[in-house]
Length: 299
Image 1 (cartoon, rainbow, N blue to C red):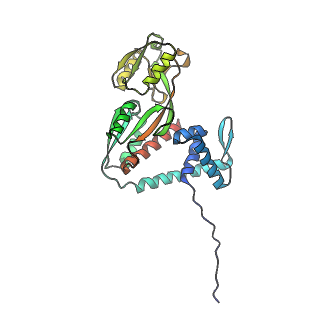
Image 2 (cartoon, rainbow, N blue to C red; image 1 turned 180 degrees about the horizontal axis):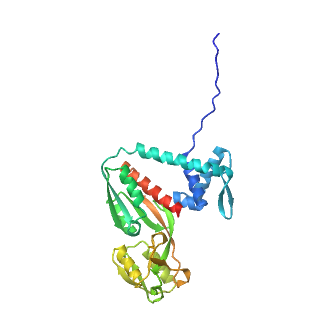
Image 3 (cartoon, rainbow, N blue to C red; image 1 turned 30 degrees about the horizontal axis):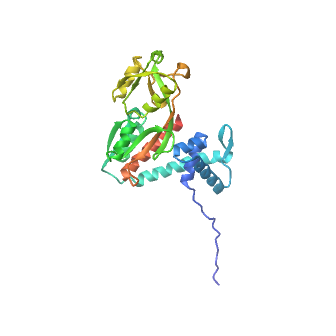
């Protein structure tokens, strides 16, 4: 008589990499709100995704208190493994989508973000997509949005006030007043203000803040050149308003006691000109996203 053996093999279950990415982002920022901003989701969606992961694993991953999120022992065990799994996921994605060898990607970047912050991401993209020609288009955020609407660029980084957006938020930065070291330009009235262009995304917020505090102002320079704007600030001819992360080391962020109004926070968002973008475009999206999120977490 034949012998029938029944093997009760354990049921295999798959981890959802989307939930893991949410968990890692929440763990690295120690905040559901911050994670929501970085992943361009609502805080409720972040909480639900973390809850789904906790239910799937059968253990709590965070302790929540007034200080923010703290990893539980189970969360600490998961974090390193989750990072490794996401790294493998991204590596596989990169290798399997590396078949695009030619074409052109037109990338819009604000003047102040076109420097060293993007260099590692662009270099990694150029190595992976060696046959793709990258064209950088620099301009103010309103100009770049107009170019996207007209189909002249494929994707763009946009600086916009924190709030609902059609783009993917890659970080939130404080807009700050910038002056020359030991300068006195911020004490002059009307306040001399130097801006890159009259279409600068920061201009409405800056002028509104000055008007609300009854501070008169005058424009010193609007050239379309970031270096020319910086030169007027270095010479103590004017102050400027920049994202804190873009202020050069030889200039000073003016403190709250400098007599100027507090400025709002701005999101740095990634916008696509069309939903079904070409693989070469999506490859650049991935590199820019990973590069800026990594720098944001490191900061």
